[in-house]
Amino acid sequence: MRKRIFSGAQPTGNVHLGNYLGALRNWVALQNEYESIFCIVNLHALTLPQDPKALAAKTRELTRIYLAVGLGPPVSTIFASSMRNRRPSAVKEPRGTCTVPSAVGLSGVRAS
Image (cartoon, rainbow, N blue to C red; front, side, top):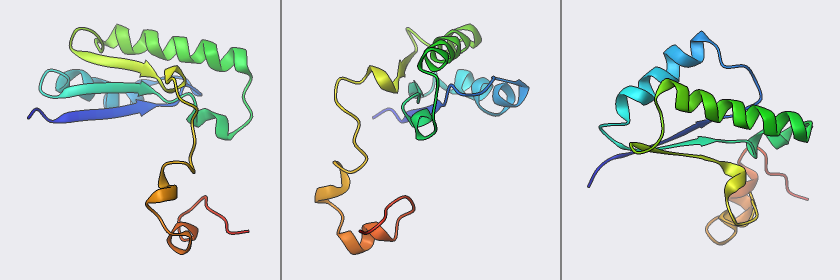
């Protein structure tokens, strides 16, 4: 079975040399060795108030950057998290697999 890479970035900042040297260049080199899936995690950006039009524009910009550096078809998959058909839910998935006391120990979970 072929190993898989799944990684992504939020479209909230500007891509700079550090992003290229730290991640993008490595993703391009590794995409031929692994099944590669690269995500633009624009739903994660919603943890802070965002201008919807600016976020959409940044999502498209990051998609273009991924393609420009050499990521994408036919070698790897690129998608934006907002393209998923189902409603995002941070609580739905762990509900059946995690007890309340252990969940309260996780960052971001509060007991009422």
